[in-house]
Length: 203
Length: 203
DNA sequence: TCATACAAACATACACGAATGTATGTTAAT
DNA sequence: ATTAACATACATTCGTGTATGTTTGTATGA
Image (tube, rainbow over the protein chains, first blue to last red):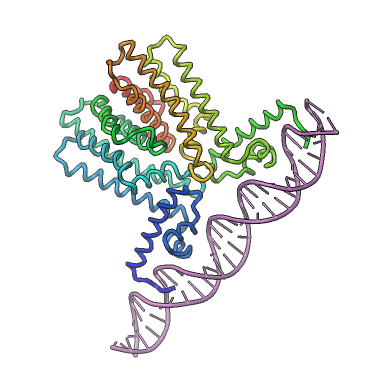
């Protein structure tokens, strides 16, 4: 097979990842063969094996992608807004949840990670990788609450870990419930009320 | 093979279901073979096929089991307590979440349904069955909020659907996050604070 | 500049095992 | 006598990882 330029090889790699997301979304990770992914990417299985060790490797790479994207956004939200910390956080939550409906790419990601994989067998170890990454982002989220306390927007002595934890559970729960059953939550109508319920009342 | 009494056959069936839950919990649904389940139940694959159509059938039966159990509890909570509707609901939430940690059987169920299956292939149709059942329980949950309004515990005109939805997302999120990463939430310490955050402040 | 060697980036072939569903056999409850 | 409730055997397909083949980009040396 003709050797390609580095750029072309990167392109092939990207095509494989994109194809994998699509195939995983439709068939579930467990029922997607590397042949399915190769075909969807327009290459052969050999190419998939050249770039990735196995299916779990592909899955993990996909997760890295969305984790990085989320972290970027979290950090940018923190540093680039004229809103108060709680307003920043509230807006981030609203936008993140709304993205699930409006951004098909994101919806595929979250559907795959929440509903279309089983965190067993080859994927068993990846949950702890994901968890370590979540701990990282939780700390940053917690820092929003800390800044809010410093600004006097929250009572001194508020438990920032409890607040960050509760917010993660709530937003994660909204996304998960929506993906399980899009008819359960009309995100267009309910995102803001659901998030406001949290930010107006709970804290 | 010796024909058994009806009671013995029911016992075999129960053994298969129990074994399936254990195997699914350890290996994930996708990576559990019917041979694995048969072996764990101390029978052969023939017996599994006698009682169940296929793996999806077993999975669905397991889900029926937990759904019925939850509905019973929801209905009993509603009718048998001297607490106010919101207190009833709050206590139900606390107990349900605490059960995840203390009741291994429940933890296995929720782990299997949230993390160890991929809702694709044979399991694809089962999510909508689960969703229909959830809609049923959501209505009952909503009725707690309605009664609370009637009693004057909540403002007239409160959106009971929003409240029930938000509670489902929150409790589901807590359970999901805990199962993904037991280190993320210390349920012993955090269950009450998390639930109280909701009931004391959000509503 | 050109020739050459190496190997990256694939494509194709090989080898094998696992899991499924169905068919058939067995025995005792009814 | 019939058949429920299994156990065992049969038949097949699918998917995986590894081995091997092909071609051209790239580096190096003359």
